[in-house]
Length: 259
Ligand code: DAK
Image (tube, rainbow, N blue to C red; front, side, top):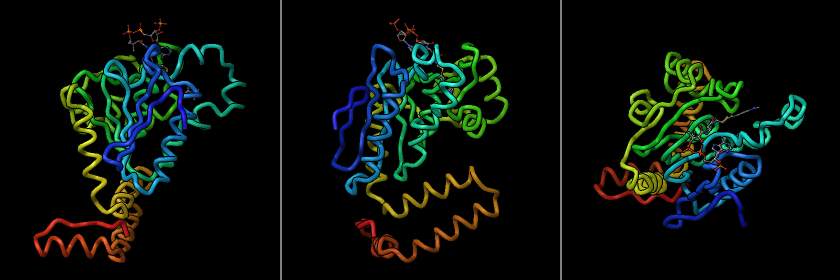
């Protein structure tokens, strides 16, 4: 499928790589781009050869937030009736395979929210995150007030959302928003290395790990642990569990068949 606002490729035949591609607007997110992103992610999710995805932008901007020009004249009736954001921005929440955000440059507003919808964020040392919507007379609308405090705690989430200030990669890593920081020129190597590593594990275990960790944000501790325990038990029914443990016992590399 041909896309206008994103570029799509595979790495090693196993990793789906999606690059946001609206360079003149610093990858500002409009409806058309989000439709394309959702379609590309769904296609990779359905492709048996793909084990993991990497979502990235340009060196200067992961995404400079929602497209302000496109939003400027929206009325309440437009966004409410059109189900703005919910209709197509949240497709990524339905994706079962892991999605790594490889973030360099600006990631304010919807850019930060999009990165937070991914499973983890690897940041270049020039990355900048924030929720500056307050400066536009609005608040974060794609999960920023919910995912940011879960990631960095109330104090820093309030600070960022109420002052509109940006935080650099070092602060973001210290706060728990990003998992690793690497030099800008190593960003894609690092993200693709992590993705290829994930692809070589049992896909059943990978899906279960993602599902179980996400459950931690939707349930109380006892229910979450029970959910984990049931998935853990279920994995003993897979050939990959037998293979993984046999390989360890016999000091060889496991060859998972995702069964
Ligand atoms: N939208 C549209 N165009 C943008 C843009 C954006 N968010 N960000 C940058 N651009 C455009 C600029 O207008 C400029 O275009 P030209 O003037 O060249 O035509 C070009 O990209 C380059 O930008 P700058 O010249 O400003 O570049 P600088 O390096 O000087 O500054 C910057 C980079 C990222 C600091 C700056 O561009 C900036 O502050 N951008 C806006 C960042 C921002 O406020 N983002 C948050 C957007 S609000 C909702 C749900 C969610 C949301 C809203 C509603 N509902 C449920 C209703 C989400 C809202 C947001 O994300």
